[in-house]
Image (tube, rainbow, N blue to C red):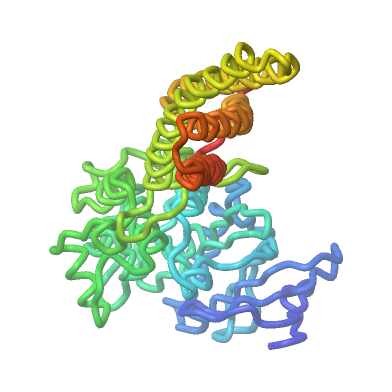
Length: 456
């Protein structure tokens, strides 16, 4: 059929797809000079008087559907017939939509819950507009939903399933041998031949189930199996098929899959509102089997785990206790050495002055250390160690360490005065200085591991 001119206007360029009803082609509108899509309904070709009646009804239904003008519905531009006599075939001219079908996406697996909610809401918007015009879709399924590159949903084939039924009559839409719709997505009442607008919502429920889980709610080997399942079996909850799906999704989908249409959402508008609420809802937390790191602000370091924070707090408290003991030691022996130098070494007044300053610095370091401890305790309740606290802690470590070292020197001198072996005094002093160095290093490492918050 390539290069064939339909209706004296639409030249077929390339085939886009083929289904049970016929083929879809990309064509060129030679009057307006624009690309269009042409759907050739080969199912209704020939057939004698019954075929003539079916084609006439199809064109009549298509004219009604063409009145739908909605951003989520593929627009019908034109319709007509091609061929002669019993070879006549009806065709529809549609807007050409560049996008990807949900059937193609589902071959790659389930989609994210926000995408499913967003797309489902747009499908509902299209259904609401059609239902208000008295038009049912009757064949909601992945291949009839296109997603454009901008994320807009386009619903295809509104009313085409019913219009293309070669056995439909005014009294009954289906008869034995032909089912309007696609069995894996078909509502129970539609399978019995009595569709209503909420039948489209049931089909959408099947589609949403498939989008968030990657599989259909019912599994069957053939058409009869699917119809039997829709009529008699209860669907599983989506979360039982795909763990991690929140309860709100379970409730929404199972409501849509009620056997009784009266138990479903009353209309597509209400369902669209419910789906948009799901779209705005936060993503569910990760399960215990699949832990994920907590969210990170742009430009900041990820928060450590609870175990790291607890370990950091214990380490910080231990270091503060050790430094407090060293500070007390320095306060006692540093001042002892300072006053000893001040009163005993009259010939060296400068030494007494230096010793007094050292004692003052050591005392200041101890004060900063205590202030830092209080700051850390206050900030811990809010889960972080403030910048000011970090600075105070480092100053306390450094100044307190300097004062403590001089105090150790005084301690060594005390050993000498009491004529203890110098080696003993040296060992004790080196042990104290080494402990101070280890504690200071551990304090800095613990400060790196501790959670950091902004003091602004």
